[in-house]
Image (cartoon, rainbow over all chains, first blue to last red; front, top):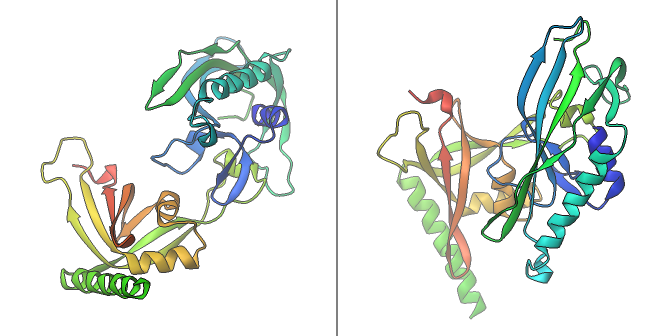
Length: 159
Length: 144
């Protein structure tokens, strides 16, 4: 939610319409309905790896996050601006994830809802520097995947 | 000339509907997710799930699209759907087009089985669709 908020602040025009509602252009794929189409010009997060270090009193959870994004360019420019648009998305992510410190308070959204705010927890979530993958070009669509590690302590009462 | 084309389109659509019924046309349900709740973070986090609305589709004809089954892969089948009913649903649910309707749908409910829509195509005559072909994928839980 922090990443989505920061990206939306940086570029409020990057949005997506999902099930009739306009949302900031960042989504977690596993939280949406399965679909065969890949939306362009937004950021799609996937949790691809998990490690739990239980040596300490609070287990440290390291999750691997991949952020996938792609662009076809704009139709008005015949797609010739797709390189610039991809570079713009790179810059948005680099700027957002590079903000120091790489940490934010951990929030519990389990009981959150309409009019109910999430509960602040006692520890922080922190993340590594992003690693940008190579650009792939398929049928004129440019795509890139960014990888980063997200760490959090598993507090008492969590699964 | 325009009037002739409109009459021809209607005649083709009626003939298609009659053929679909004659070929054992049955009814299925198009499962549509309810609109998202604005600014509800629990939906974005996968904590809350949307409700669904089942819209009847008839007449349709179901056929196997791939006779040879591959181990571990879901069978593919094809559903021929009357353009008349699709047009009515697109209008009543205020979708931009049939392709948006099928892209938004979460699947086709045949009896108790929910088939995923893999692709949708339309067959046209005089620039107007008379039948839609939906390529469906069987739920993986059904694969033996």
